[in-house]
Image (tube, rainbow, N blue to C red; front, side, top):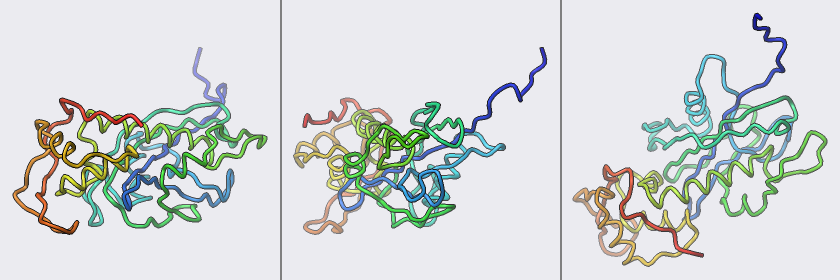
Length: 253
């Protein structure tokens, strides 16, 4: 039997981005205010429809560059590139009131970024502490009849929560925390990343001993800095280890 595309309902594929950075010692996510329906005026994660001539990773990288000026794993606009990885797929039939839309969410991590400039059809863009967004978000997305009104549009509260948990868990056993740091950083700056992502206060001496004693995690650059005040602090860069052994276990809170 020949294939008849008209026999199947149309649907679209989008990419949504959980873009995380650490600003003023707080884990923050990029959100944009939608400029058109559905959910006009509500905050949402950045993203967009996948074009006919691009695969998912290219679509995610394009949206990331359009929203933040960052290139994945490269240098752009004077700022370090971003770590970008696929997060999860979301395909509930009623997640978008326009039509059947399947979203492939991606997680992007980058060092402290400047204030964003909205692009496309967005009315505004801002960095918001994830604790504020997750604390205010009703993760049950609004259906087509408007039965629920979420603080973030669509099911983006659920996607954001998944991205934050991915970051929190992954820095336990990988060197991913260094993606939030500049190319050269101090142990104190790295510790503040862990504290911001996990939402805890860590003992400086114990943390220093663990990260400098984990093979392949940090490599001394030979330089020092006083940018944090006080005595000169030793500078490090990320080592070649992708997995940490032993892992940096998240404290119980």
